[in-house]
Length: 545
Picture 1 (cartoon, rainbow, N blue to C red):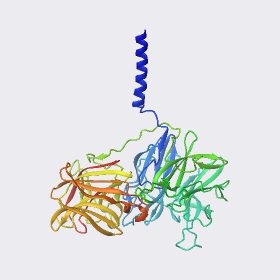
Picture 2: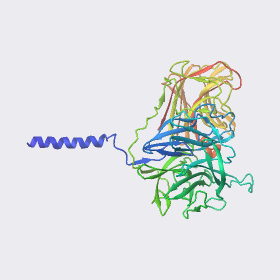
Picture 3: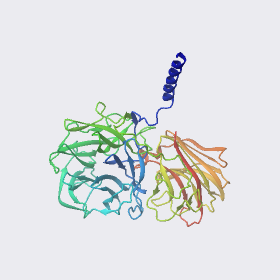
Picture 4: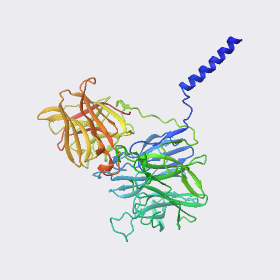
């Protein structure tokens, strides 16, 4: 009996030890780490349909436009496509850096999904619709006489739909950042505004507040709530809220406005620029806020751009309170009361064995030529050299993905032989056309070389250049904070450093301007002249460190 009891005790202790060493994969973590979407995913908007949540972001000059994600727990997200994935939906030709698709809003009503957004520089505000959020989405319905940016939709209890937007009043100077918020009923069958337009907010929570934008209307316990962003999308960004018993106002401001900002925390707080938020209620009655924020490093620089964060919301005395007890967005916080969602994980290596690109890949502006192929040489990404350049407002032969991590490594294998001194191919780290790093094979003095170039303020500096006779070569680029390193190999074994600890802050919008985050991608160009040459990429690996 004693031996049986000892065995049972030993078995129990062994099970405890195994549970400690190998936790149950089905057991949900009790906390999550912000951001929920790391990297360039700004201006989040969210909606819930039953137990499913859908989230979208701005995409600016990148194509396809408006990435769309699905989740069941608000923490783990899986990209299911892009809202604007056909050239007929999205014209980005010659769009300036940080122009294009601004601040989309997603809503669901009576079996239909709606996405409304602004195409800056190419036509204004439009709506697309879909029965399935994974697509296909409709062609754009352009909304006439709808000034301003950041439109949103609100469905009232009677089923009527309303458009909210922002506009600069005619009474203020053209360079003023002062904005009013307006509301008007919209006929979603005819896709046009109808009835009276009402200015529902003439200034924000602060007198003369600038950049009143991102207006979302909600209804909670008989009250209409108008939530906006104020202060611009930098360190003074903020979320403010107002309420009224009448949809058209007047709206009273929350005496505790702003309900969220980090501008008073100082530049050393790890999360900055909080704003541009949207609210969602879970099927269990919890409220959560998605918002954009940044993670500066190496000074007040954030190469990753504006990212998507998540914060808990409680209602107190008729007003929402963000993260009660803290009043700020936390790096680590308790998960929502929802079952864990097993989102598909994007592989760190793309070996290009599929005949379709993964959703992580983007182009610059709308592709008008068939400059890439996954089938002409199976197992390779083939880039055709085009005259267009990544240093201009063009659609170059470029396939890139976001930098998601402060510390990362990207690794590619390339087959390429330049035929003249106009031709080049390699890897580019991109903020915009005037701020970038390029590691390219090209001809210099008639001989093949590998060259590292920094482009800052439109001025190019050659940082390193070495002979490279091998057709097949390998490139590694990586970063530890703002220290970026660049190496190459001809055999994938022996590596030569081109540059280490190069200052990467030119990839931050703080220096480069605009609204996007850094991209890393494959690039080929004939730089202004026609070419029949190609560059073949065997694989591309990206991983956080």
